Length: 535
Image (cartoon, rainbow, N blue to C red; front, side, top):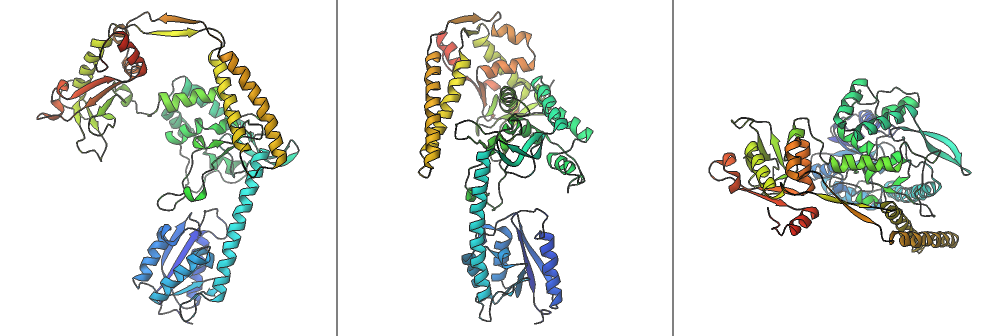
């Protein structure tokens, strides 16, 4: 059969690009070679890279585009490397074949030849291959899930390349041989140094710039180097950014814990069918039969301890919830000034407004109807006057608790979490009797631990009230921008900016700005002062 006069398209698909023999490039070369062998030429290629063949046709962008073009009469023949590239179950294959039959388009694969007969129906070879593909996919997925579940229980490393700061090593732990994580000393030291600097106030962007200048390898490139391969990966360059480093420094993997994502596979794709990447800091810690977290390292320890991770997570995810530039760090009302229309944060704009020290605060939400804009110096002066009018003479206090206090309550929360985990595992209807006995024994032990901790936590502590040595007004006068912003945030001060009338951003703040205190601390103080909640 000659394809010289046929309009030919190829379909290329790969669940994940792992550079094996079924890579997109290999599929393209194979289909192109087959077309030329029959006297034809592939005129267009439809590629779904990183998408499963179990997805419906319409959930794969290029497959959906191919179907639309077939219906539009654009092609006479479609070719793929194998039939399972089109779909991995009979139903989706029949759907595609019906579309081709109506449009009088032939389906081919390099390995199996024609997949449709003269009437446009799937031939017996194609139907048989569809059944085999479906069974293989289902059986292979179940075996993979069961295997990984067992490896998690044993504390073995279940993924591919190791996280940054670790390396994968073969070892035998508690009689179980497999792959585990060991510390990659050079890069683990880099992580510890970076965390220490962050806790001392160094910006993440500063560390990123230094790492890029030094040519510090990324995780994947470092793993390639450890395996004796060229360090420079497919992108041809090494590049760190603040988001990547922040995610890495706040990841529970630094504790050496086993993490997993129990989200069903059908929920792990976006609206385009692409698999969503889950950040390790958002994954769940895997707990063993004893209710304790399972470690996946050779020595059972991580790069840092739990207390250090807690401190750096608070610093980067709470204190520095929004990483800003040096210019923005001088902004008094960052996170405090809000758009009165959409409630988005107002951002300090470097554009001058024509006055001394001029800058503006503006809404950057593109979907906002009004997108307010106000003079920065005027807004900051107004918020300062409103703040000092109510809070200037206030002296804050805090309570000091004697005894075990928070340490016991933290241990109690941990024990209660372990007890709840054990109870949840025992509720599994498919649990093995031997595992149920072990879980019951552990639950009884943890319950006794909880009871003892509750008794200690319920003991009445001695509480002493300690007053500040300065009023808020004095602290405001003595402090820089960071101190003043912290005072506003501690009291939950929010400045909602409405739309200006007539003169826009130069209109008087008192006509368009409402300042409120929203924190629980502010509520207690205002009640004590017998004042209104609104400043």
